[in-house]
Length: 155
Image 1 (tube, rainbow, N blue to C red):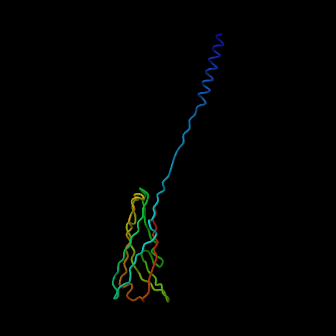
Image 2: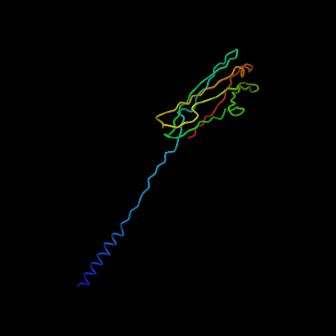
């Protein structure tokens, strides 16, 4: 009888131990990534010098764009100096009429060129300025002059 009791206890221990060994746990890692993003609220702006005065005089123009960047995203803004530039920060407008191409130099600046975003609810204004010097157009023929500058914002 004592052997039977010991055997029953041993079987019970194995059964309980077998159940305890069947319990296991696992963990699930949950992740998400917010990519640093920057977007212009409008894809176009016009830096219009208008009809330049005669006699020639230095003429300024301004424009603005707004953009946003994800909160904490550090951004930089660059430009391509336009379609007819002759080098870094050497912007030129090109004549649009018939005949040989004529070019009118102009300055092109903007601010801020870098910073940190505060999210889409807090847009940032990009102030754009340009200047045409009297000497750069005093001897040019009458025509429409234009250029396209592409701005790029990188988070």
